[in-house]
Amino acid sequence: MGNKANRQCAKVDIRELKTMAPFLYFVTANTVGLDLSGDTVYAKAMGANKIGFDNPWDGSFSIEAQVFPMEYLAMLSDGVIEDSAVDAVREEIKATTAGTLTLPTGAKTGTVYVYNEGEWGGTPIEGTFSETTFTAKTADDISVDSTYEVGYLITKTTGVRKVSLNNKKAPQDYYVTLLTNDKDEDGAITAKKYTIYKCKPKRTFSVSHSSDGDPMSVKIDFQALEDKNGNFVDITEVE
Image (cartoon, rainbow, N blue to C red; front, side, top):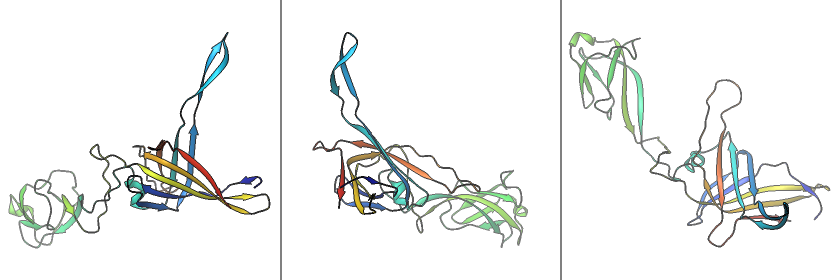
């Protein structure tokens, strides 16, 4: 057995607790942390601690990553990745017919705004929109071969993967195994596993996109819970 040390980030095997179906095998984390505690309260006599009573274990673990799939973020919701999303579009469209512009199929009525080139967010050109055609109130406002800046909302159903964070969806419970390797004083490698029998992602999310410094990093925190059989966390060596 002997003394061992560790400097290897854990791989994370995440399974849906209710079915034990694999959800995500995560191998690109930079940091995986496990923080457990179970404090003790004391009966005192003459001000001195005399009899201790142990409170239940409590704890959390976290994953922090810069490279990850959408499934990683889906744990903050109900684990579902949807295949449609409403997209806010800003594009330049050249007029081919005086007085009208042709927009893509699916642009939502009531969300279409047309501006002269270079005037985005200013005073829009007045008109009406139906199906794929914007018709200017004054035909001279849209000239053939002129380019206009157009904003609209559209529902996309191809090439889309979406995670929704809202109060209608709640994170699932997961069964998680953290897999890493220890090294002893002779250089021998021993597999180390941490089994977290039941845990639930905390609904906290913070992200910062920057053109300077380190790449974006996303951290997900999980609350460790006791399962229905009284299991909490196991730490296992496999030689």
